[in-house]
Image 1: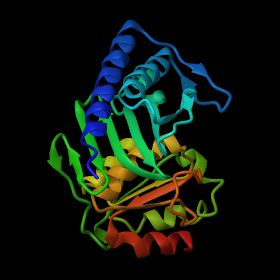
Image 2: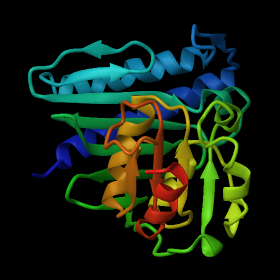
Image 3: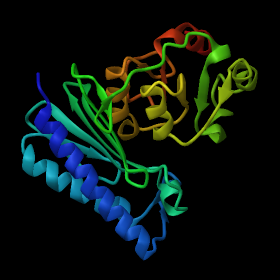
Image 4: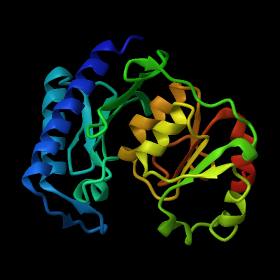
Length: 254
């Protein structure tokens, strides 16, 4: 199945939302704190409103799930899952690695993913069965298969202490060629484009995962929850180059 129309409108929505966010950022922005202690700004809300408006007009039978409250049941078996600003903490501190994430889930499977980083001018996208791309160029996961040559990222280190793998984490990371943490979605795109081998997230939501999961898999990388389930709804995630699967599963005890 072709998803050309879905990719076109998702990329267009992401770019327009990115423009709105930059405009608000330049005007000055303050964050409020939500009940889960995460920050939110008027840019998050405006970005989500724009995205839902564009996609609901283009695909009126589809449902929606957005981080900032967008929720609608559809009649098509499809649902757009949206993170209007992935990395709001980066956004409010004027760091450049925040992104707009738009994913399409069809019968429970991520089939379209768009990740737009407005401050970098980079866009990553994919559709099921059609490959993954970075600014129009095909991307492929790394072929590295040994920790001594691999780059690993473990995001949200402040949440790792509560995880079962927390105590042995430092010893495990010491095996790798390099450890880098750029922040969430950018690390995922580094795995998708073959510049990093493992991205591990101990605490994450479906809107953080729908878009990148499609991009990662279409680039040849693998994704699963930390309990080994093939799901974006387990609250955790790990993506990795195919050659690192035994290393990841061994560490997680799977």
